[in-house]
Amino acid sequence: MSTTKLDYRKRISAAMNFISANLDRDLSLDEIAAEAAFSKFHFHRIFRIVVGETVAAYTKRLRLEFAANRLLADDRDDITTIAHECGFSSSQNFARAFKQRFDITPTEFRESKQGHKVSKDRNAASLAARYRAGDLTTTILDPARRDAMNATVKEMPEHHVAYVRRLGPYGKETCGAAFGALMQWAGPRGFAATGTMLGVYWDNPEITPPEKCRVDACITVPEGTQPEGEVALQTIAGGPYAVCGFEIVGDSFQQAWEDAFGWLIENGQACADSPCYELYHNDGSRDPDGRWELDICIPLKR
Image (tube, rainbow, N blue to C red):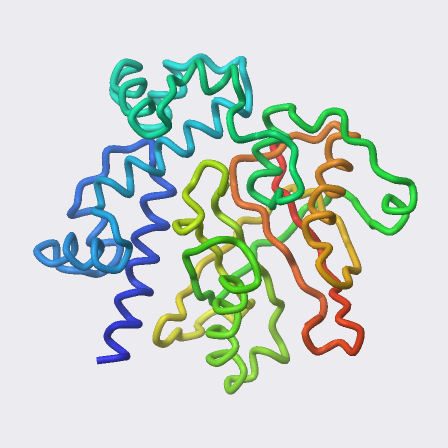
């Protein structure tokens, strides 16, 4: 029973990824069920139990959240274009759904930049949205912090990874649970010694309800690796990234993200609409001083 439950979770993650990659399309339930290798007769009920939303509600929410980020990212994009590219049949339908979700019209949301004020609890996803919205253009790095960061733009390879997904507020509890579950699988198979660890952050918690934010704990694995239980496989896209290297001690991850995006702004780079990730060069939980060595990797437009 336990194995079956974990297999359901893994296959539902595949369905979630498929929906995320096709928000501009009107996917049929048959297509989504086939992607997750479920019978169409049972898929809808299984999806609702695992995710806590129906397929339609989940798809609609992601479309609206993606549209909200688009509204903040570039005020040159007209609302009708955003509505169509986010899968809505008309700007009127989009405006109605948007107001139901955010209690504000798309135009009012864009003008107010609601939920995007600078604060200490910024995270990877919200920083990306703020950068695209132009809200961090006054950021100036402290010289000492600038010297401590090794930043460059480079082509990153694709990463073929095994991963465990958790839903919940970004932080030690959610991320720790995801990596703990992943390492229970990876350790006995030798991947902990040979693979590279990454953390992928999908959502902006200032738009997405924190309890629905997605984090993937990942480790690179050879082609042909067979996942088990809740562990699934995915490929993290390669391409141009801003790669900002840090050594972090203590609770300084948010400051590192702020510095990374500050460097990005100063160098005139534009973010792509795909998730950022952290690439780890050591396990800070095992370091005597609690020191983490990592790269913050921010996808860029070509």
